[in-house]
Length: 399
Image (cartoon, rainbow, N blue to C red; front, side, top):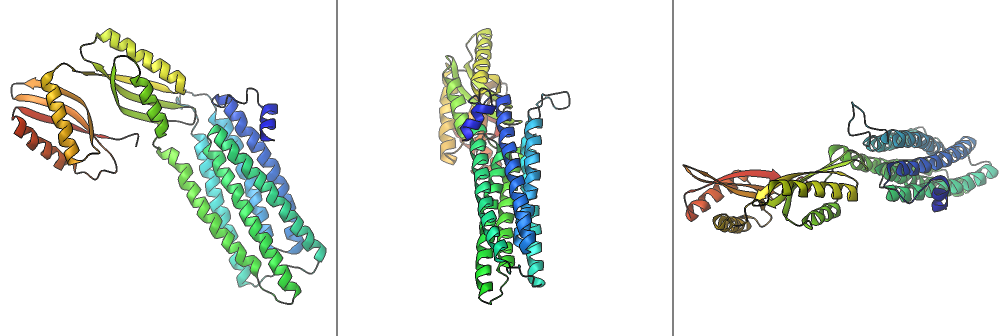
């Protein structure tokens, strides 16, 4: 059904990498969500008022908040595709992340309100009205229908989030599945409370179930808040994407290595990548420049991003450099086999040969850089005291 709607309302619907097509997918999912939320809110509110059930009314208010989140989704998808301008030269793609964060915070607020209301109901010993069997049966039917509605909404959001890689729709899908769980809990509580009520036993199961649901929703909201705020802080990029880009660059004739790769994301469709490309120092400079120009153009088009490269000349025929490079590799592997290095070069001075290189220290490697530096100095002296290491410690920006 969803593919039929995509095909009907979205031109070129399979080209989800296109920003316009992606935006239309988000808008379509949001409109479907608005319709479903409006229907479930109206149904639940009427039933909750009729039977005086706080859990059903609270659940209806949850759906009312969902109308707000659907509106936020709609605004988020519209604004995130806005063209760059002087104030925001990288575009507005991160608005989608902000919208997802707002949805997550709304989930937390709903959980707190639901929990407060349920506790108040227990304190005041408020019991639902089960004297009218017709209303109770209608309640069961409508709650069952609303569960199906929200399940459908959650599945639509989840599938769309995977199709267009949207953290906003992912957060909204989890919100919908939370509603399925909370409404199911309300239905179970109402059924049990009705049965024991008919047998003359009055227990406020409704309110206790409301507390349980509020705790579940609160935990989910906190988890989603962390997840949706992560892209705003700056995630490490997809490892498969890094691997594929690196392998493609290494396929170009004349490229000896790639390092210092950094990703900057300003939304799903706006990514900037920088990296250092190692070229033989004996190559013609203009030839090397033409090579990296070609790399930038092809990689940028293939992966729909902006690639900027820096040329690092590597001396391949200097036996002394090659000898010390191999020794340095052995030293680092002995110290910690997670360490890597690059930009290895000599600078000859009157005081000795300055050996310059960068060491990449992974986050998981608990290493004292000063201790490592002293270790290399002492080991170099054993080789030849003329060697003076000049080391720059790099961060691993791609995780």
